[in-house]
Length: 119
Image 1: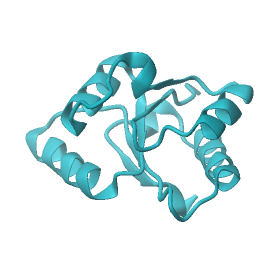
Image 2: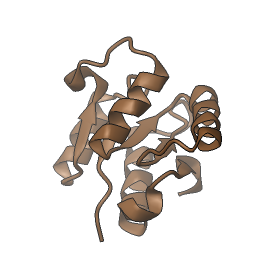
Image 3: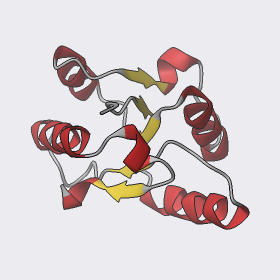
Image 4: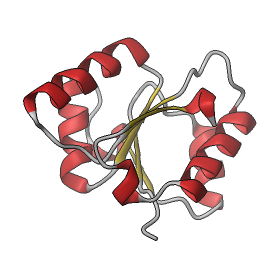
């Protein structure tokens, strides 16, 4: 099983969450680290797709639209996970991300969109 590797866009970047995920061995990059601050959502998804990373965002409206656009165009990505940042405390987001990572590998997540609130 190939574990998910994540990329957190600007909307999902929270120091406490990043630290907690890394403390548990989760492979992740952030927009800040990758020099992707203030780039559009399309560029974020392109970058994550090239790197084989699941994009984690709190920007539901834009990324649901982008997911549908890529699907219709036959474009591929490593997956998109949408979290509702305002509704979930960091500890709950951490638990859900870890549960998702334990249950779904990278081949299953390919071209898939998951809502973190389902986990």
